[in-house]
Length: 278
Image 1: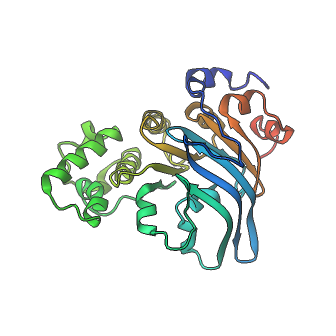
Image 2: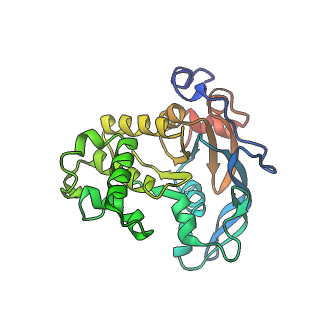
């Protein structure tokens, strides 16, 4: 088992030395700190005492079987779960040292700083240009030259510019599935976030588009802190610096991706990675 993912890891994730910090602490290099988080959907508890830290400018992967809590935790990080009636959270989630669940926190500002890309691409029924420029316009950017520059920058960051630069005012719905997902990433980048959350961003895509998204994630970590939820073990091994394994709402194990995939501490982690369950 110990060499199962070694070839993948050597070519990608092991190139970084970043790792999860001590759950009880945070350092200046930690963008996100989760402390003793419990979460409920009504009477049903979905997360149990989760603690971990995510270094800045790195990729963290959340893995585990369906219903294990990984997407729930991801949505807690930008308070998307607030939109669901009857939810409740205890504990703390710190973004650069501030609890995002503290009283008086500006949710609009939080969601600007913490962008999100969903499993199914969801471009607005507008032009490519208007999709990327929507967030900045809402934030008050009106200068056309500034918007033009921002749209170009974000489309280049999402590796889409060369494919769409001659049809920026065409409908975004005319793009392929992989292009639409990269457009959604460009739209998320347009608000200048510090953290980018991705919930199964490539699960509905073909292999070529999946590779494009993975290459993009690998490039974006130079400027952003990225958290990705994935069911794909090979994908987690390829793109992430750190990995956290969840099971039934609990964090079983977390650490550098190379360590977790080749020398897991917990037998439950090994059983999941090797396909014995899940």
